[in-house]
Image (cartoon, rainbow over all chains, first blue to last red; front, side, top):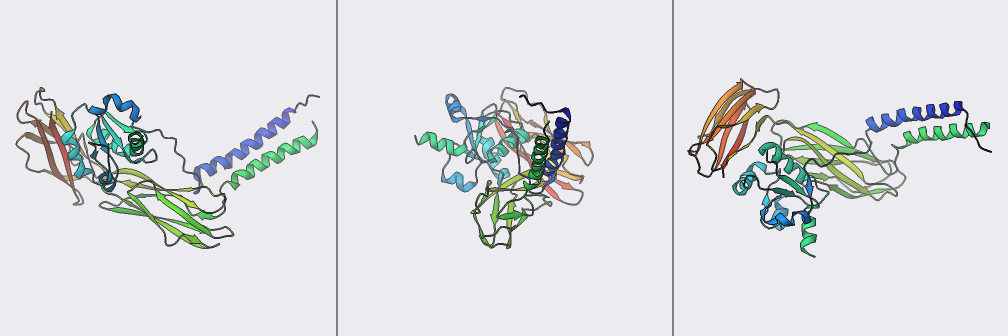
Length: 147
Length: 224
């Protein structure tokens, strides 16, 4: 026998669900322990190491990691530039950068947001448009070169 | 329509409603807040956020991992294991360096409480830019005519600009400073002194704000 719900049941169910939605939305918006969500896409485009191979000789690498990490090891030819010492390090970048040259910024790995911050700052302050972020960061370089 | 089915729907809906309120509950550590937002005072070199928590569970909880995702942020706590009912706090410190604007730094917390997912703490710090100057880089190709190019220096906050002083310029460039809006906006014009010669020059100066704060700035002129 086909069971058909009366319209009143549907109306009541809908009303109850909408009522449940109100505290749910309020919790999601205002609860101090709500999860920290981020739907933001990276503002500066990411590029994979493999995609850079054809132009590897012309790319200017920028290492956005702390100074100690840079000293321990970096992509050959990379210039150190981080927000801890932005003012001191920026002239070194400008002494080697050629207008129009592609800059690729990296930090530790995909979990690190520092490369985005440095890349955005290069775009905003210097209005350099040819900036990208290395997907996977230093970790991806190490994996590729140790194969 | 059989009455028990309607009643069942009501029970399901009521359970969903109760479930919404239950989302905030968790065993183990309970946090006073997961996000701290602050504005850095002018001239500050670091900003601290204190995340208070308590063990509201029935067994001791050990914080096994306390990991900031940025090297610019440190997180410390007095001890790792908290008895039921015991409270503690994590001190998160953002080292400002040369950062400006809104900085959102994340610290991941992992405990040994059963079924407890990692907790994400966020320290959001707005670092005011007292002076903005864009673009910082002016460049000409060697074949370009050495025309004037300019950058705008603007007061970044409500504090107006009292004076702007340029350091003695390099002989390789000429500079001019003009007010666009007195106290708020100035145009710094730069041009190479000689056409066709490669240059890499820093044009430096200091802005003094209405409250006496001195803000150094530097722009770069390239001919390549």
